[in-house]
Image (cartoon, rainbow, N blue to C red; front, side):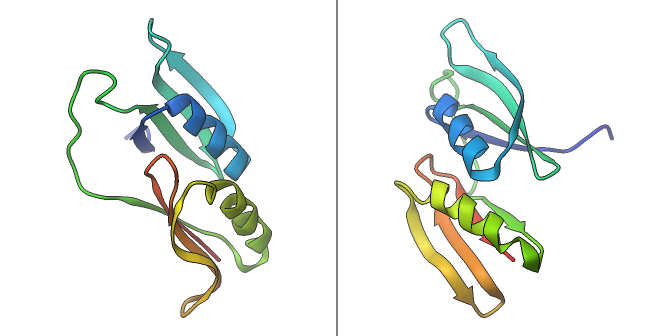
Length: 124
């Protein structure tokens, strides 16, 4: 196997790329747009992993199917500042299930669905 990465399809993928770059201090590796300007495929490096984004399948004339998924990112205990910084960017327009704070398994955790409909669990 050459590689495995995470792919997400969202409406307004260009804005999502910008949000995730700011939330995770991610490096944009590539961005390919179709003739209509919509992102066909973009990749960014997020803490050593690849997060790929594309415009939602509806915008590209296809139908989506599948179940709800969540991206869970566990950081080391000394990386609480990273969790807090990411949460501050992602929380705008998000549905918050567990605001940033303590839970039974973490001193610093947040669970939310961002304004693009992507669910995140960030914790140390």
